[in-house]
Amino acid sequence: MEELLITLETAKLAKEKGFDYKPNYYYNQKGELSFCQTYSHSWHSIGERDYLPATTQSLLQKWLREEKDFVVNAIPSIKEDEIIVWYFHIISFKRANHVVGDGKFYKSYEEALEVGLQKALKEI
Image (tube, helix red, strand yellow):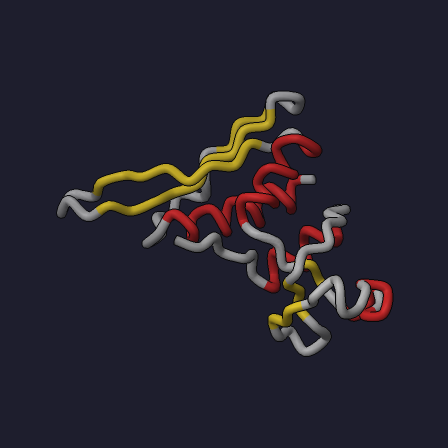
């Protein structure tokens, strides 16, 4: 089982909103996912403008919860034909703001969570 990395679009939003974590994966200027071995070269040699951190969905989810007061979850639902689908749910207690998704269903937990993470980042 492997945790998923955030998409390029989510990485752009996260960096814009102040997410400043230096993971081992990043998106380069071409939008390609690359690996950085912190022992072989430093993030400074890559250059701040040359990369976007590609962290895991769960780490960004935790940052949004602990630093920005947005709780983002993906929740299962069963459609009429008994197929499990997912939607996202966002809560911000400090803002008294309760957002229940976008009214869409997604095929997987990770897909719903990714959209929820993007929506929460846009709300900051």
